[in-house]
Image 1 (tube, rainbow, N blue to C red):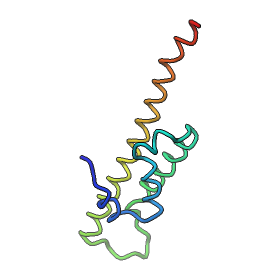
Image 2: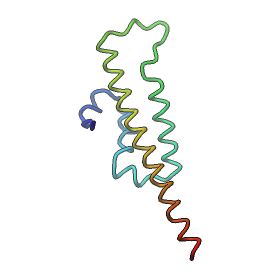
Image 3: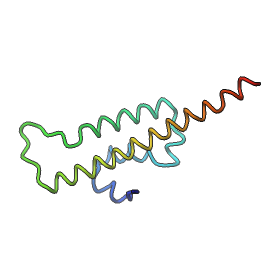
Image 4: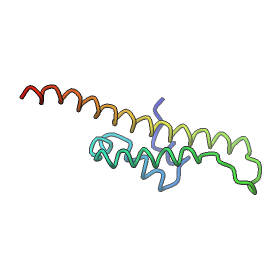
Length: 103
């Protein structure tokens, strides 16, 4: 299910939004392969820290839990978009390789 920009703004911080902006078309298509891998790593790190409780933090309320689920879902969708773009480029490279061998 697609989520709106307003939903992203509601659940994510400004630095996270800047990262997420790179995962939407057309920005995703113009990233270098190395930048794409770096972006995926950053998103995975943020996603893995979602909902991580510190020892001194109070118990989360049901609203906090729902917010963390939504935030995690937004980050997971961003990682999925980046993974699909990496896979698309990999297949695109494989398709070009046989024709290059023939030339």
